[in-house]
Image (tube, rainbow, N blue to C red; front, side):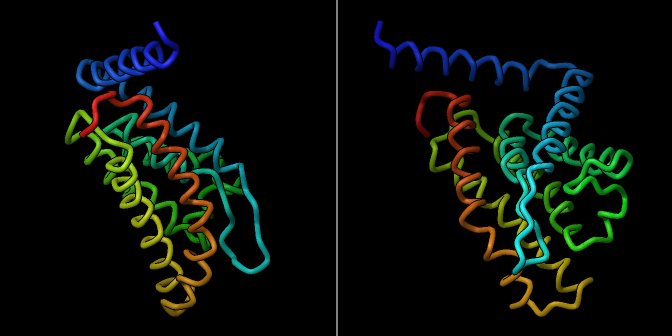
Length: 197
């Protein structure tokens, strides 16, 4: 058996386990997995790079948020809700902020994580077989939701014009977020069915 064939079989096995888990896991197991993903999101939030030309920092959460939809399905927004609730309580948001993050400049992105997880999780649950292109499109919708919420927050609560909000809160992040999306999509493809949609 070749290495490639063995990898395909292992990927198919992982995909079957994940599919079975989504269908057969108890509510407690799904909530526990949601909490684990919320904790991973909190760890990713500590990857932070503040640049002088934008008030919004680069962080690692986007990768976990997008991947959560394919891992948890419709429980992904619950996981991101846990991230927000526990983050407000324990201060694990980027920069170790607590509840104050909900009035800060990045609050829109935090709420966008829940919307993105809901979009990706709902679409990921809608079919069993995904191509890399299909996964990338779904995750792009989730990324767009994060950007929309973040830029809207900058306009509504920080007095920026739409052009300023896009220039400071979206454009600087596109290249890095597309790379994160590529990693998340590749991982999701690796654990999804080996058939092509």
